[in-house]
Image (tube, rainbow, N blue to C red; front, side):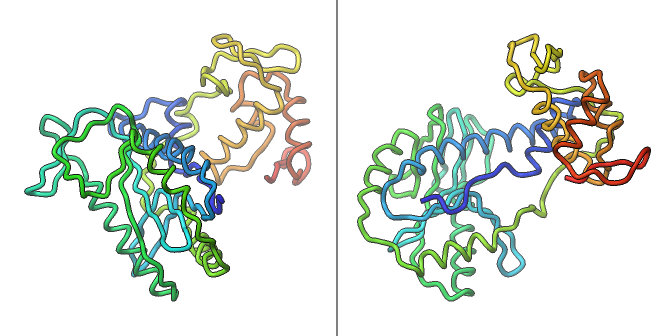
Length: 304
């Protein structure tokens, strides 16, 4: 049973918005693509865990802290006998493991972070956290290489690694677990969920200003800004996707609020932000119907 769903981080969502509204510098662009690819890989893994029928509790994307050290666990599954931790990697291409130095390389010679070391760190820190809160349960950790186009050479078979081609068999065997959970397992899941930190202290967001960003409403489907109004719909010229004007404006408001959390939501700013909606009265109606109206006349703004 899913106990904590995965949600996209505010960092990644902010970078997605910035990526299609401005030209990110190369290093920030690469960092965004890395985060985005990793998140998509985690969603792929979720599609496997959501099919589980055995008695278990699933917690996705835990950001925890113990002994002033912050750590993340991509996926956690609590069963009656063990906690299973998964470090999910969405790598592709040919890689090689150097057993002598315990290092990973993308062939031919580019060293990458050791996912087994990341996994071991998470397991150690979680064990410290569980001990601090009085829980005693074995931990089993694995690195999951989710991408079908990933190959790893020279890896010993005893390493706790699951390849994409092994997932079907792995979860078929996992589903055979018959032991039932009890209230202590639920208490453990609730404790971990309550300790989850919503905001990472390691966010990397480039500086930006309102004037730097492209204005308009992006297509929900293809992200194009080639939107025109047809009756009560926003229509994309490129893919012909249609969306109610009110839904499109509300999406734009959410985007604006994430990018500029200190700014007040006003008719004029949302009118300028959306661009394609030519009637201020339409903007006023949408905002007043969905948000609390504060103030009057020129001082009017809207609280979410």
